Image (cartoon, rainbow, N blue to C red):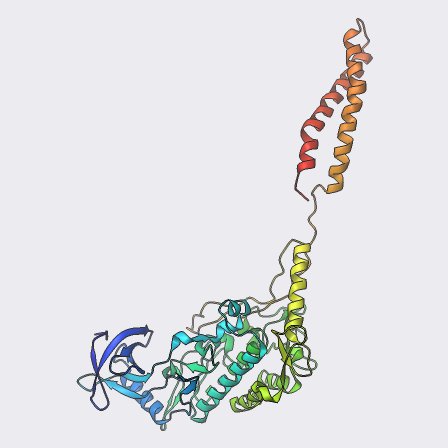
Length: 466
């Protein structure tokens, strides 16, 4: 029978606990408030199927807890990670689930919202380089603490990572879905997201012992996105070659267009990318992370060391832009935000000046899960608008003016010459066939001129067509 509010459960010391309001229900279990413990919540698995494995996994998490204590920001307690704090059982001592710290989800947002600048502005989230660097550094620090205990996220992506909006500390949920190291046993993570999956795992998945390599790759992708306006490192423009149109396909083909020096000539960087304004040591890290050899990827501890150095204000490695106070850039480098803003503004002006066919993106993003069950997240790929062809086959302004002037003149000529001729026609008693033909043509011209003047000339003058 499914658990519900008001049910009584028990902790390891057999102390009774009363379930409060249901907070969340997922595929594996449901999360409830605990009336007797306002700072904790209970996660109860939906069935006892696989209960022994779940129990062993939670015990391993309790024995190898990462060093990520709660932090305080202006007197407010903030939980960094919802890690298990104890086992929960039913009256017969059967395993039900576990308790974990109550994380204030309402005070947090997921990193996916920060990557979309327009959405971030609407929600009051940070858009400048400094806060994003802090988020990247805090994420790397958290992963480093997990890796010290040989725990790995595996399904690491912006949608799965939350942060406190005021302090920018990272908040991690659903930790029992991680790859967990136990005593002589590894509990694998089955979920992956192909937009953040390393090339060597795209077809066969992540096996035991390979989780750290996957976390290293996914972290590098997320850092690149945070520091480069949400742009995915495998997005770009085909350079006259037939390339995979989806991100997983490009990852598998090692199509990384932002490397230093001579990169892959089949693909060009997105024109809105700010990678050229990154310092050399940061670009070196990305080049290693996205190299064809997985062994070259920087460890998360190396990322945290570098990113923390840039995130600390007193180091002066990030400076305020002289042109736009809302922008920040790397010291000694141009402002990538200004360059991107100018490029997009020029693109919008060009599109308005030359209406026509919209530019096509160089990348089609997958937004639905594959048949394997892996989830896929859409990624950005902004490109400048292509010049549109001028429409043809329409009446221009000059043509309208010519017709407007010629029409009345023609009408006046007919009226001044054609009407007297017609009256002469009526007055002639006997006339030849040539006279009849000539006067008939005069009458036709009179009718035509009347139609032009009365119908077509006003329509042409008032028409709004270009």
